[in-house]
Length: 106
Picture 1 (cartoon, rainbow, N blue to C red):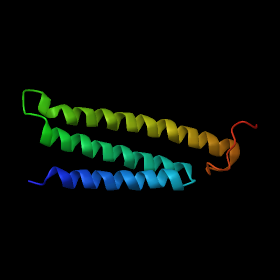
Picture 2 (tube, helix red, strand yellow):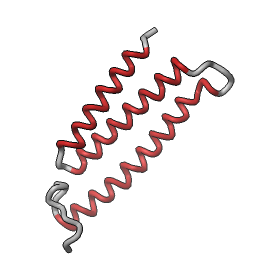
Picture 3 (cartoon, rainbow, N blue to C red):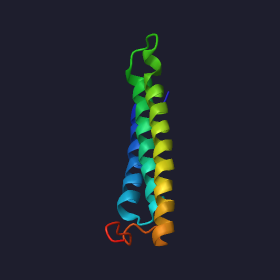
């Protein structure tokens, strides 16, 4: 069985890649993809801690999986809303570069 440390290192690496993408990228779709990477790193942590640290009782053994499903659902809603905003931004401004979009001026 693989130790929990390997899962935590993988999760930290994926989270750092996502954080780097959010901080460096200017394209709105790439920023959304980086946020998704960060959420998937959280899912890996939830599943690893659920598998290794929660004592196995009737329903507690699936608690991390249940939380991961909630995170996936919230991520899907976030992507749908974010892509809708990106499409509206492209239709109004003809760009998806977040540094060139000023929402205050019409």
